[in-house]
Length: 582
Image (cartoon, rainbow, N blue to C red; front, side, top):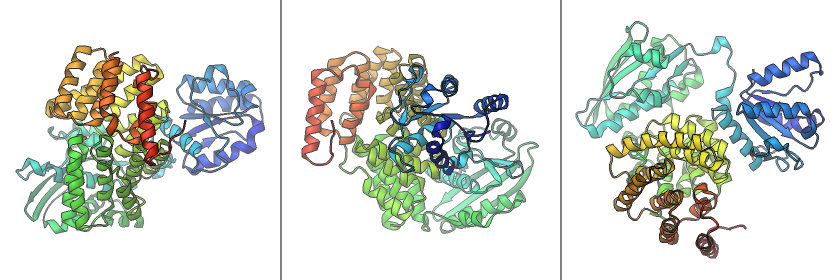
């Protein structure tokens, strides 16, 4: 079974071969039948491989559009939602697939860094429901991990709820460390944290996650001392395989994390490869104070409340003062700066901090994701997508990498690809609501009202939980207005809009979202008035976003909207910050 089935005309073999090689270089397996002689065996094998493939690339050319085989394979793939079409020589597409976005490859010329190949790679990532070729690589049965572990969130035993960030951070680092061991399969962070606060019913958790073992533990931090307890429990019989209590100075926290991971590997009688031993010893910083403060900043970042961005930037700034070489702190600061820039709170879009993160650690996924966010803030959606895809090659389950990739695809109107990235982001973060709302928006742009409302309901369910816990969460409230409008709950949408304006009156991004909701409600004058109020403060990237945002399709031809867009473009052109086309 191959990851990708390539359908093409045999006369195009010479130009398809480099494309197949480029796809295989990404780590995917590809089936493209270059040597099979047509006949009964040919038909049988083609049908079997097409049925088993998880994505189908159809290469349209002047020759293939007349091939009944290629057209039939394309229809089958489209019916199953697996079709990723590409085109050479501006071939005229069959009428029944013209509505599906097709990637033109005339300018790719074998360049794997080209915009067209990057778009193809992103589309395939979305279809395969994974975001890295490494995740698709075939593993022989004898090398497939047979031991799986679910690391439950370590309990905060410090007597101070404010120390929760530290115990959560320790848990996540242990998950990351164990994930570096090829002989282990690790239950995702999102799934593991879904059990936070619940009784540790190991047998039940093992059944739900299909984990062989469950790691439970606690963290008690007091001043410069830390106590960590950990137990590895067999999920089948609730028997403890290994357990230990560590009392150490906080300065020993990194050595302690290494010790715990290696003790678990030893208890399972596994052997670490040399590169795995080295990977376990690699840390973003050797300074425990910088590490502690970074975990605090990260907690605020994950809350996704715009009012915390300034706090994240401030804490990360202090972290960098302590350790200027801490790439992760630079990347997280860049992401917070991007958020502040987008909502009109700062002139710094995070690109300089992202560049610093990349210089320090080009193998850090968040460094590339942060650069993707900076590109997106300037309206450079294709460059942003390429950076986000690089993040996903390094870490397929990175939440922010998938979210940025989805946003850039949405800006490029690649709705199917955007949905794939957003869905993966949602699966990685239980508390996410931002990517969830964009799934609904993508379906709206596609004209799929049923899926649009279904996605809106799921997003609103998450938003309501967040607003109950944090009534001043302006991003959640603003996006909740849009989801309520999508669901036809107009009175409630207007009530939430009033609340949002009072909670965060100066938030440009919030008012942008409110304008989207008012446009959906048919309140055109209110939508245009809201946009007019924030137009002097919007960023170049937000203007590019307005051009692509399907929420404004209903007002796009309104003379007031046209004049507003022209004024903003002219302003940015004069300031030489962005070159506008069209």
